Image (cartoon, rainbow, N blue to C red):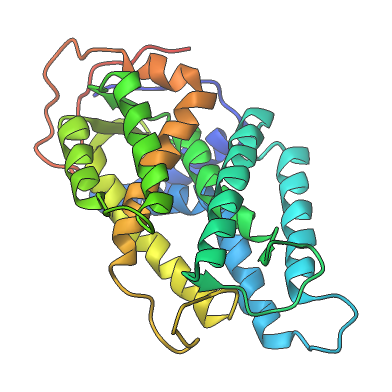
Length: 307
């Protein structure tokens, strides 16, 4: 079994080790590992989870006659949350750069989609750009925050990794298609196929405690798109935004999972642009054949390079 005991022991890492040891002494190993996986995923998605909490709470309490609009209050909350994450070193400045990139690219797409009639932001707000509250960019930034934090917390490796230029072309094509399909034929089916072709052999390697596991990258993207679809339903149910012809009581179409699936590949490529060391991690080659037969089986994986 590959150990990672020589990794730097940050306070979070020490807490993880103590909690993991405590649970493994009291629960079946597989159950303890699953609980630790869910806890680490929850910690990685904390920024997005706190945004969802704010959407739910403000939807319940906000009054139209209050001196500040709900969207503006949510923007102030998101900015304060980001500052707090940086002050407490829950996110690094490099991770903040990822969030900024997501905020910019997300806001640009929001402005286009809103003015194309795909969806709308029905509430009032002073800090809006072309009908889009600037708070909306943080919903995309939450995806970037999750990815960057998950890669760090799980010490992820992605191997074998396709040529970087090919992933960049795919990400650009996906992003452009979100705009172009309003005027040109929608090529998303071809883009779905390309994600499989490029990443069919790519595995996400991650560790829990001293054990390494893996999952196909395409499966990880599919599962993540399901959680993002659920989060999107929270957004529409709390009237943050609504699709054309949708009421707050309607569920978002399952077809939107496909959009999130594609957007996750754009997101992942954006992370690799900022975190070039992620690509360096992806260059390692196993010195022995990995043993697991599925994503849920422990692996005596080869020791990935450190640094």
